[in-house]
Amino acid sequence: MVEKHTRGLRRNIFLLFWAKALMTMGVINIVIVLFYIHRGVSVSEVFYLSVVWSLTMFVVEIPSSYLADRWGRKKTLILGGFFLLFYFLSLYVSYGFWQFAGGIVLLSSWFAAFSGTDEALVYDSKRELGEEDVTLRSLGILQSAPRFFKIFAPVIGALIAKDLLEMQYLTIVTIDMVAGVFGLLLLFFLTEPKHCVDVEQQESGIMIDAWRYITSNRDIVHIILNRFFAFTAVFIIWRYYQQIFVQFGVSIVVIGLVWGLVYQLVSFVTVLNIQRIFPSVPLRLRIIRLNQLCVLFSFLCMLLVYFTQWWYVTLVCFSLLAYVEYIRTPLFSEIFHKFSHSYNRATFVSLSNTIKGFVDIPLLLCAGFLVSYDIRAPFIIAFVLLVFVVFVLRFPKGIPKKFV
Image (cartoon, rainbow, N blue to C red; front, side, top):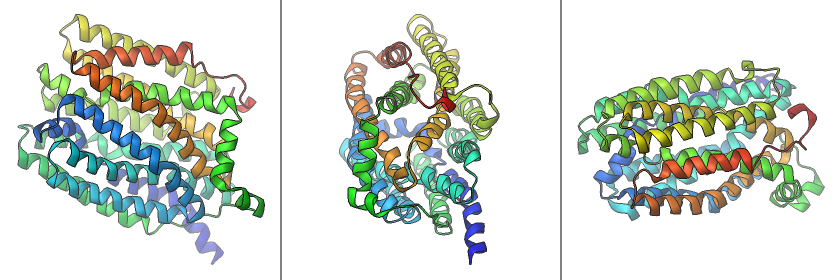
């Protein structure tokens, strides 16, 4: 029985990789904004849909991860899988802002159920196996999963929906839904790892304990803000990049090729091998350098958008910006999991995502308002936010020596 449990723990990373890869295939993503607009949503309302996402995350994130810490990681992931399935079904019938907003609530609930829970399951599996020294590699593998099929998915989506017709949109929604069903089935074969909860921790409450730990440690809050301000800066452009590039004459097929083969492929290979990239350079310094590169690429994007007609060059530059920001993710995850404890790991990570909600909502509302006056405005917002990250939210020095 013990041997079977151990084999199951070793198989967890394999099962989660393929489950996440299938469930985040995202063939529809390359044209999702165009699909929204086709179904009666304005460009400003596209940003407001992201506000709905953030509000849902704010409400659902902590309860879902508290559920994962108390009820079980595996059960919570399966629950999230069903939310994703209902989201895909909603895309068939949604028209206008409010109906799509209902689908976004389902999609955000799926993400919240996975957020922190998948990493906690992998981390605790490694911990139980006595392999905590290779967690960065495992987290890199897990976080590369959403990029695996996305190497090809944007190209496939762009080729199928190249004419932006109703039936073409529905075809790629169906592809994503079928992939999501297979991903959900894989979750049933996961093995629940042990996570320790003693009597004192139960009495004080997992959620309260995690919140107290975060709020009493200024460095942790600083690191969380450093991560999410940069993420939101890039997300603001990503939220509508398909629309602006198509509007200025870039073929949706070209967007799919660049986004798939430049961004997704390179991101997948990099994060899959994140533990091999500058392994002798401390995590703190690696993140600082990546933040500085984000500022550089966002500045170039802003200049290209406002002072040139080089839209294909701008698309490549934005893909590089998104790539640099994305590969910071496993580095931050390694730090967060080293700071947290087994009994509240999922809740700890989700509390950090709740802080992200405070960052996202006002910024997305601002972007939605400004884009109605100038469709290029989000590029300025992104640059300003990234400058703020580098010069104001500088990475703290007061973290454990192993990260400095």
